[in-house]
Length: 403
Image (tube, rainbow, N blue to C red; front, side, top):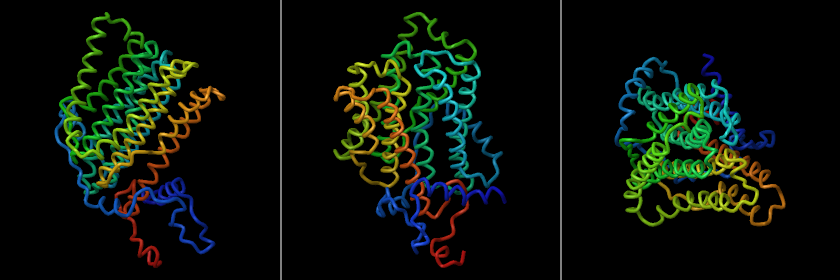
């Protein structure tokens, strides 16, 4: 009984975060939000017709599917799929930020237990991420919200995992490589969803996100066992071969993505394209021109700010896909990068480090608020809870007082 009694509390907390409420003492319905809705009625209507479509299985996923299928059979039927997604996401956020706090410039060496907690935590995250869809099909509770919740949290997790992996390899000692690899990772992940937005089907390649996550787990485990300096003991030819292998695989995947993307009408190419290119171009300009060496002195904070801005537009791209609507070209997440470059152009009346912190806080709040708003609106429209399989009482019965 206790697990069900928590649900109304979670629902109220989510609504307060999203909206705030008008005073019920003034005779207003407390369910009506003060803020304007994020999704239109037309988008919500089209959401009802959305069906999740995926094609292909990566090489590692074929093996892990056996483990995930076995684990999901051990779960009680009342466990909601989104609850699994959220549990994995929280584990990922905590372990990644823990390492980043110990190595804010990606040059420091963290305690062994921090690397090991990332390795174990990220493997758990990967398992939970693979189990949520199976649990949804097992319980008959698949919804478009589940797809958004899963892939939206992955967009944020990709940023955290890539930065924390760089910390485990002490890539701050090679800032050019650090900058390039993090933004390459974000761009490749974004283009996967861009292709899905255009084609309607997510295409999984022979080597895909599961392999990237597995690589990060191995990096953390080896850094725990052998120390992060281990990654600088390889001969230069080996390092170059590894670098070009990763870049080559990324370019191959991008070529596959754009083979589909460029077949679509111009509007569905330009809007997502501008949304991803704006923060990347701004980051490149600041990286090359900052007089205070902002990226060199604060690489992790810099990457997190731009990474979360990209994660926001990635979430908007997923929402545009599941609601079959055009993605807008401009977004509030661009304010953070925009303010940062404007501060630099204006001669730095305020310390760039302070501006970077302010922009990071803004981008984080903007992302969290958007995600909460969208999830709440979808839950209200589909008459479901986010973290429970049980359906909400219908709005009519609630308002009539029969429930």
